[in-house]
Image 1 (cartoon, helix red, strand yellow):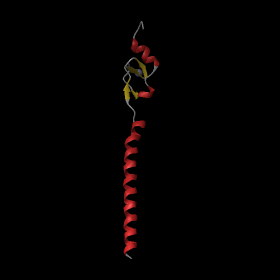
Image 2 (cartoon, protein in one colour):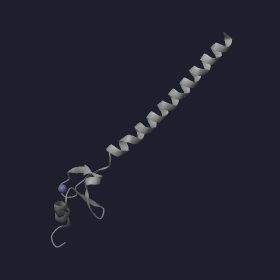
Image 3 (cartoon, protein in one colour):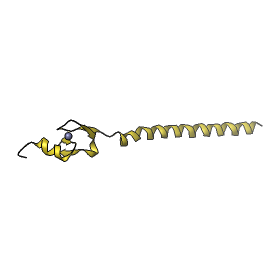
Image 4 (cartoon, protein in one colour):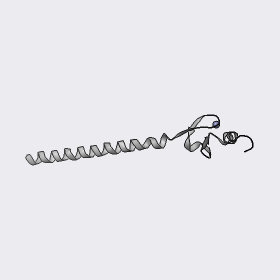
Amino acid sequence: MGQLLRIAIILIGIWLVIRMIKKALARHSRGRAPGASAQKMLACDHCGVYLPQSEAVFDGDKAYCCKDHLLAGRGPGA
Ligand SMILES: [Zn+2]
């Protein structure tokens, strides 16, 4: 009977450890996931509209929402 109790305690212990690992992994992946979806937002240097960094058009370190605003942002003669 004592041995059965010991096995039960060991199984509960293993279950608790697995639960802790699963929780830690879930927290870890949850902390990482927003990095992919909530990417850096940039304001167009010409019209000021906000857009994700991946959709921005760059001219040096300036970001624009589209190529037209990039050309407009450069000004005449560029
Ligand atoms: Zn713009």
